[in-house]
Length: 386
Image (cartoon, rainbow, N blue to C red; front, side):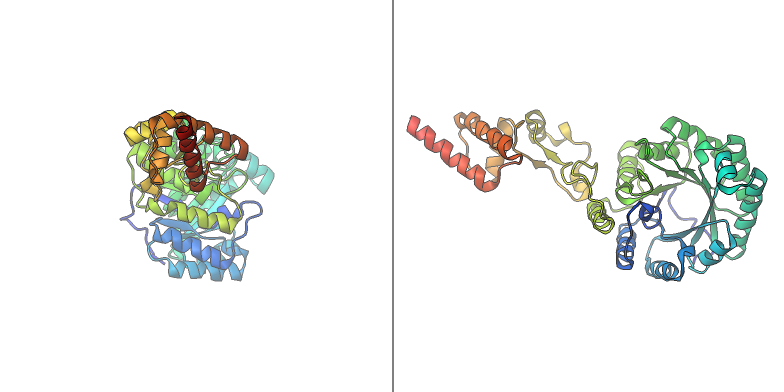
């Protein structure tokens, strides 16, 4: 366990919580081997920080967390708990780099969930942060339901956390109610209030988790919570693959993560979670670099930059041109060239008709063997006609 925060860490730190919030997805439960494999894959890919579990769940969970902490080669580790002595004691026993302690900060949850008041929350933040800091661990304070909290109280809570030795505060949009504009305002206000790390924990209930995470960066957030494939409670969290690639291509910011490994990590988590990734899922979906439209294929063949958001090689993939209902002449010529067959220009319209009829009948693209048969039959008809 590192006793002090790593002052050499990059300005923007991805804290991946697949092993904590990701596993809180309803119906998801990772085995020990799966958690170890996911942690190792994220570590090897250069993800700088991993939130690896909830120690108060019991000794088995603590033993697994300690194994992950011991085998992490580059990534810093974090454990999650509530502001209760039992949680804190269990968390400190896992020897992670950072102990994260969460507490509700909206009046609704303070009163209706905890049965407490604001004064109790502030006193608990102070006591808990000092308890962990005195034990030699870095402490992060999480503000649950921050998006529905009174801003003045949120500022006060942040100041108390900083004064008590916290190295970071986490703003949790627990119900996914923020948009990028309100996220930016909220983070900006807290950035002016405290000079410690600010982490955004965005939920995706309205489909805005990644956008809100990027907005938080623009406003001064230093740490970003993500999960692989966007796993998490209800609609999930900001997806690791989306945040990393968007930061690179929209904001010119690198997170130190090997993006070529993202599809393999996505597949690993999909298997372990039992949650398959949709073919059209951005960045890691099987079909996101597949092209069928005649206009797009023609443009790609002339210059990839015509229809390329980013090079698929960045995530270890390549473009795939699909022959289907919307294909054009350029795609037909290219498709047949790839299987070593030359197509005379007069044969292209007939081959397109065969391909379109096949796709409508079978709901799939033709195989190499079927393309070869279409070619043979079309050429035979042409010879007879001649």
